[in-house]
Length: 174
Image (cartoon, rainbow, N blue to C red; front, side, top):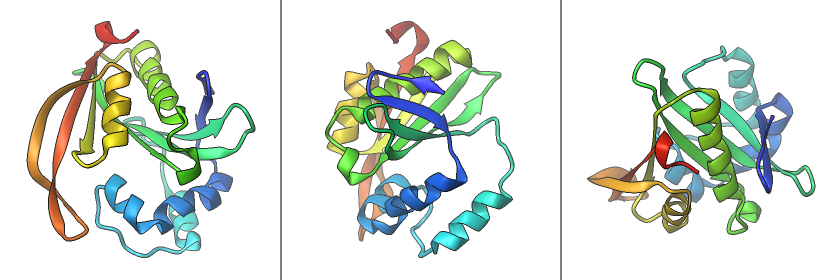
């Protein structure tokens, strides 16, 4: 388990899926955080997919838990881990009641610590939609630098949206 000031990141457990399923049910949020198009999926289908998964060292998923009350707040991932080039990407999705309270920033910092100190990575990337002001602010507060824009990169709810690219090097992380 990885501890921050507000959150704990731990391995995702099957029991977490019932709470995290609410992220999938919120279509407006799901289309902003998922790479694949949103499709309806029952909790039972999600549980079955979870049961059939294999461990993947290149994609490390965590459940975000409140240190204050032990409630599940969301999930996060260090994905696309490239051990040769020593880089990876970060992603996070919080339940609506957990947003705007500093949990995302704390989780992002804990993921960076995991990636740099424990996994020995050199560079982290973070991609987000240009319309996701909360993630942009959080990334910048965590020390990420804006590195570029993929124009009209994502199809979101009927229109194309730019995707912003952020990066952070191990030497820049404090």
